[in-house]
Image (cartoon, rainbow, N blue to C red):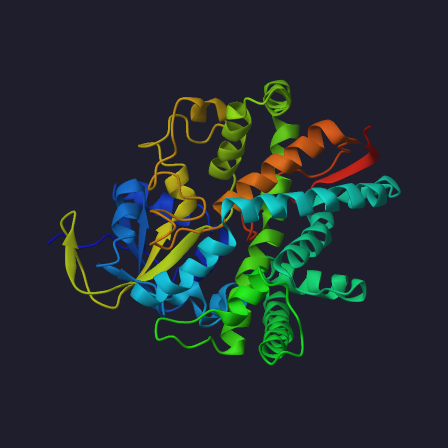
Length: 420
């Protein structure tokens, strides 16, 4: 067996956090390999990149998710006991809830609700001198997803719950005070929703029968037991949080429109003409080109060999999502923004992994991809056809050290006007 190449330093945690999206891919390219090992958070960790590595990583006979995600992420982004931390039958049973909640007709209902919020919010934006798009999207998406999911949200609580939901993905990794804020937000959200679901089970609160909240309140595990209220709350948050996190993709879409004005005309014609192929290609290229999640974690299930390397049971492993989406073995000119590449190419399950790889029903690929795509398409229609705005001078460079990566300015717009 060949030795797995090492990243040189004793511990690479700070180097990884300084450049989380490019760390794995850079070191693999330097060593001409698809896997290196690095010491991260004082643990020896396998770092994989590329489509062949992604296909390997999603082999459930070889890798486990339970206990893999770092505790700071389980305590903020994912929630402890959530679907992302399960394997086998437990994972498939829990995943079925999300596939039902995110069925096409349910996604269409969510899109209609977000469109309503766009119209409501646009009037507020028109009264402001400037609007930071990323931050302004959070309350409208929070109101929309809570209404859609059947979670009662009094107007007086919108700001609080918006800040808590946004903190789960925006503050999960970063300076200690921001991370602490995410932990406090997680605890508050779980307490709020666990109480709501417990009251609904007791008949003291009525939830809409077909709502996501009502369904998770009654969801049963593989042994036929209803979930503990705290775990049910974790999974309800796993519906709410990702919708608010689509603010990242929407902001990146607006950034791409501004940075690539040559895309505006074909994109507009596609959205207005009913042939959505170019619009879909633009959305997919945003998801491929822009950073969102840098990597996902797993553990080696048992000893095995691959590509001449030996992997030992229990080893931590990371799959490089950003690097796989920019792998030159899969993508021509991977660092160029080219929506047209998707007009002649169907995204693959292992070379196009912005929200994970493989197949969502049985594997750990995110079931919310359809939501992200639909809300991005809706938002592009609003940005192009339903509002007028200017982009003032600002720092539009992507902060690649930030999780999630965004324009340093948050993408500020001004002179907002609603179009008839």
